[in-house]
Length: 252
Length: 169
Image 1 (cartoon, chains in turn orange, purple):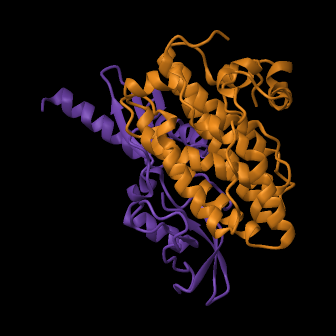
Image 2 (cartoon, chains in turn green, red):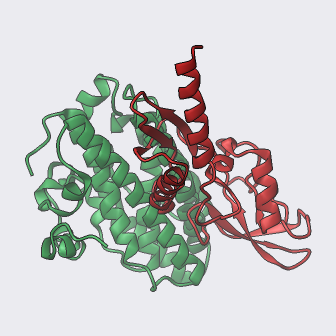
């Protein structure tokens, strides 16, 4: 897979990479979630994200004038994926999954809201639909975070540990690189550094209600947005891509 | 309008009526017209029909079945060259659902979406949702996510029945 020549396509595909990997991670919960309702919720959240991925990939290929969503999803190697490191982190315990989803949706909800003003013809509709979905994701993760944080001693410890463990992956979400700046300047995309206030407002409210402590922010871990991943991504791809690699163009 | 244009317009109307017979595979009491999913139906000079539909939720698996249903209904109505396209803009919203559709949902046992979609505060209380069986507003949410992407699980405290609520987006 060659890199994209159209910056708009490269940027949209990057959004799709984030939702694809997180959607796959959530699907790993199916049949294992703590309650039946939560199992269904995980399936729905995963489905939303994979549906968003498809919309982003399809539009990216249209703008690029080449490629297809199946190739983007299933036939690339680790360095071709440009998702932030946060979304490839393992599911861990339930609190780890909820914390990861809280951080991602508090970033993605305002991102999609702003993207609804894109100067593209198709992207505003995709972003509007996705932002309505992310509002549900954010509330779901937030309500669980409050229940866990303001719950038993054990659930509280696990919720705090999850936030502390994942916080190093927060800065990467908001660091604008050349591609972000280019698509934002052209009126197509959004500069992620402008989303931090919205993220902090949602996180601060949730953490306060959960009676948890906001982790101190260090330098952080980064690299996914430029194709440098943790070891986890290779394992995700091995499982996710197996069918298309073993039986190319398989259909059912 | 000359005779030729009239003929084209009549064909477009017939094509739309055929497409509007397709129902949602998950909520079979609603047609895609009731839902606001059926967007535009055009017939060009060569007789080719283009039907655009608005996807509801990003990952809704019903879209493929709906597209197949449109092709089938149009074939039955004599339209052979049919193309179904998904249109992202305008984004679909439950505000597109007709009043008749809301009534059909209620009769089917699904509480319809509240009238206006819109932004609400992160942890604001849910809007009033009436039980589709007994009409009581003394209801509570069990889960924001239900049997399909468009539904949430609720329960009525008055008649004790659980029910599906069509989410308002």
